[in-house]
Length: 293
Image 1 (cartoon, rainbow, N blue to C red):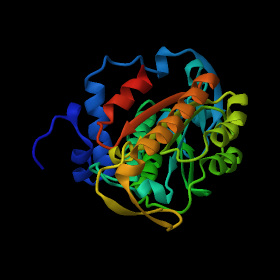
Image 2: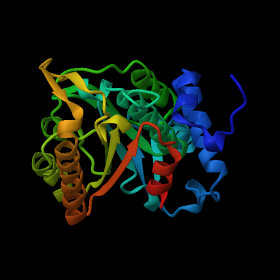
Image 3: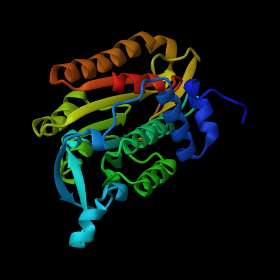
């Protein structure tokens, strides 16, 4: 591979790296190199209490002196650990397999971004979980913070494939029973679902005190229909086909598409939910900067 600056690694560069662990590490280190060193945790934090070790916790956080006295594994917790459990939900429905003008499919882009996000969380010794969904939860990895746990998440993302029908709202409703502790909920999707249904499903999370971040991933070709004359379109989820002239419906399509995105933004803003959007042509760093801002 030709030499590429980490700071300006593009989606097409990342795709050529193939290995998710290596790609995520390069992107995270490249992004971090352009930022001031973050305030650390551990000894500089205020000790809060001990809690018993749970499967998925980072063994580096075990207090071995307590273990020597009690023969039990306990972790020190600090005031800053409150709400430091992050839950990643990645839309893996059939529509996420779409690719037109971008260098990779929406699902590949979402999976690479989720890999980087998980790497950042574990790098900070915080806990992260992963759910892959379409209209149901296809895969669930409970929260953890060890490198072994991160490897499991990256491996699952690396082998992620498009599934069935989209229902962000149904997946969110099914997910509630899996997330026992409140924290940060990050949903990565194209959000091609009814905005009202999505936010109705998010309401219980908001009531429980979750911080919610919605990240919309789109292919550039979805923003406007290309002028290709008469084209046969196929619904990636139902298989339905439609023949039409793109030029004759472009204005109506763009209007409806923008209304849908505006509805998502407006509902998010009214509920204190962060909403971000990116196309598969854009570097991941802009999303990282917004998240850290």
